[in-house]
Image 1 (cartoon, rainbow, N blue to C red):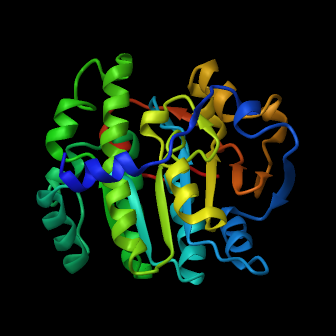
Image 2 (image 1 turned 90 degrees about the vertical axis):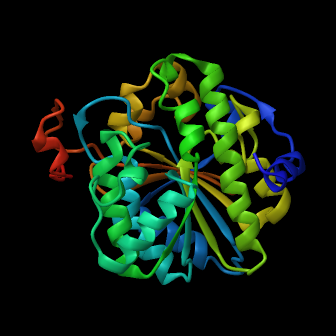
Length: 305
């Protein structure tokens, strides 16, 4: 880790520990129905006297081979156009390795418009097939909109050390180590962009953006962002029913309020708000299928809403 990353991490404000939704958000949140995630973004950025500078979108990570619209797909379709319309032209992404070799592949994509495992093998070497198709569509949409993407993820060497280890999903120490690395890379990009005065969007895991408390304080950036930007910082957690359901009960206790299934909308999104903390619940995907690793999955056929 570089000296600048080490210094930035030491500068990060501390945050409390919790693994319970009511501790994290409380019980007195507002509930509203919105047309889309884009509408929520518009509302946040166009509120009277709004001076929001940083929006951090957090997801629960997909774990299995069910064919449904994951959070990144919904973010790409609904949030990116709204961010662009509100002059947010820079997005830091946890899934993209902060690595010189990946920078070269991304530069080639923005020049040619071609992106795949063949044209960007280093980029996709750390990305599993659950999000492979979603990252492709995300990058294409940013190119179309003229949004600049900044890598906030592990270097290739750090990925080999952590997330690519066979026992990663069963090893809490490796998971915390990976999260700490991601925190360092993402924070470095935030500091670089902060100097320019630009508005920033960040996309990553929902354990990293919490303002109040989190199960893994060592990997959290929310307290630092609250400390640096005050009310100019907003966190938005994205809850897709299928992703939430496939995770264990501990994740549900942390990520969603009691009775969350009753809040799943048939269309649009349901939004919970407590101060500068937002939780957006999406509808279920129609006709969810269990997949294997066949070519049909890798052809990136979109699931239906």
